[in-house]
Image 1 (cartoon, helix red, strand yellow):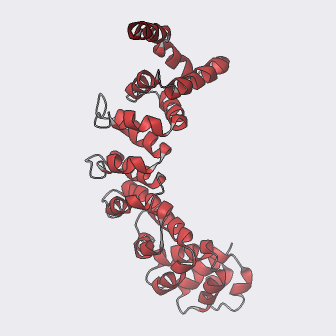
Image 2 (tube, helix red, strand yellow):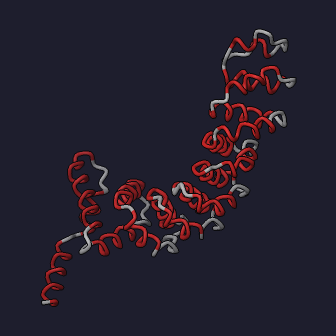
Image 3 (cartoon, one colour):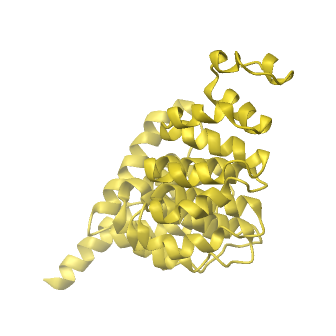
Length: 282
């Protein structure tokens, strides 16, 4: 009986031409959209079927090394829909970087794990925050942020001081997704980072924290023009405009300038005496 069952299952498996199905699911030809959508849904069905899950997900993960952007996006969309059941199959091949120096397979793995975004990915992904390639480090921090879990904080903080600006941006993005009052100092430090992408992500993190960030932000005002602007922007996004308006009387013309620009309220400059600030445009 068991042998008969195995024979039947083997026949079923032979009937599925995964390569053909994959070519249909990843086609870029508009006239085959219905075929593409059908193949896409078929892969999801097979991935959720206990009889075909192993074969299907192993096949899909084996395609991570593709050079085609269309294929990579399709793989991401399929496996994102499959969700948690796909994680063990991806992590089982996580150490495979790809067939050349582009490390496409590893980049795809990190991207898709981030899209799935559960806490289960934190430990396997965290292995790559020290990678020699900045693109891999960046992908790892982004994936950790997408879990929206505080369990990843100890890893994320490491990326805030990376020598590569794009990696710091990813680390600050990650922190912005899970920020609490404990992270205010890290985020305020990010407001003066040389890279604008870091500064904007730091603002988003402070916005997430909200009112508890207001007092520390006020305390940091007046240090340098770059930080002042992003402090003003953070206060505005938090909704602390009344607090920000008080700085329209600040002794520093630079502070006043950024307050005016962020609030964009012409009434504030009626009493302005500085010749350049009097004619500021919004």
